[in-house]
Image (cartoon, rainbow, N blue to C red; front, side, top):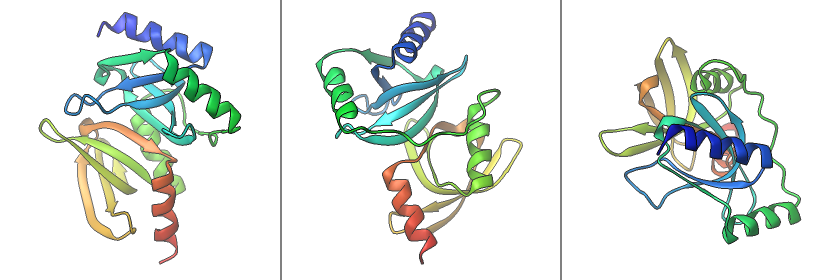
Length: 184
């Protein structure tokens, strides 16, 4: 997708606060993120995710370079926007520094405040999802405690910052994992 057109679409969606559908997983082209553009930098977009039930579903940070399709407008988007408003949904505030590398900023925020993350990694033409806590982060090396849905640890996963495709924060699944983890 042409970068200039993509950026213009995202800027317009940010300005109008309309729902967009963003596709960035070339291994599963029917998978998409639905939501409102919250922040746009030259390299990243932050989306206030909305669930299929038109509820607030946390945030996702992704690199613009991984996006291959954006859908803007249409009946489904208008329906989702209307239901979101009728439910009086509201996303929690995100205290993410807007300058620099947003992946680094998100990892640092999560580490400092013990916030669980969902991280998609690029794994040889596949995406691997990790859910859990950042345990250590230095330069471009991340140490992450990967948890299952019952907050049981799979152990530590070490990976490079460059392997990250997107990072999610504030989802209902992550909130559930955090509650289970904190109440063991």
